[in-house]
Amino acid sequence: MIATIVGTNRPGSNSRRIGDELGRIYSRLGAETSLLDLAELRVEIFLPIAYAQKPPAFEPFARRVLEASGLAIIAAEYNGSFPGVLKVFIDHLPFPQSFEQKPVCFIGLSGGVWGGLRAVEHLQGIFGHRNAHVFPERVFIPRSGSAFNEQGLLQDPKTWHAWSSKLRAFLISWLESHIELEVL
Image (cartoon, rainbow, N blue to C red; front, side, top):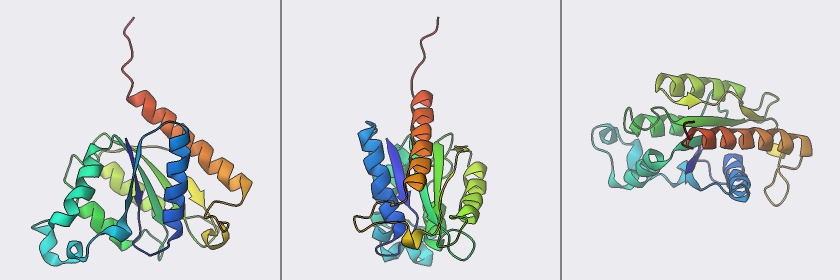
């Protein structure tokens, strides 16, 4: 199962639209997915005591990350990096098993022309430090404020094709890493 993490807690975010579209793509390809929307995190996770004692409401989020055999991280660029809520989320996940040897792909988006490049680069450093298998083909969605139609779908065919082909490549790579090869 691939867990898709919507890396912001902003209501009605474009990151959530991307998460929904990613779920549709992977569903059509026959992959089991789980969407973790950080907008659903309870406020207790942000209290200082949460570092020492995880709130019970955080357990389902942690369990879904631990049960996932691959992760897709959607990160909007906020102030030249990724959202603080995503960092808090990462910091509260069990170490080292949350990301250890787990395939991870990144989708960046921003209102500017670089599509979340800085956010994704910062995350790649963190996930590399945590021994994840970072998928090298990153996805960037520039000008995200105008990238979606009324149905919440990417409206530019070139952008849609570029990101869906990279996400398919991640799925193929993920599948290959989870298939036991017969020894000849």
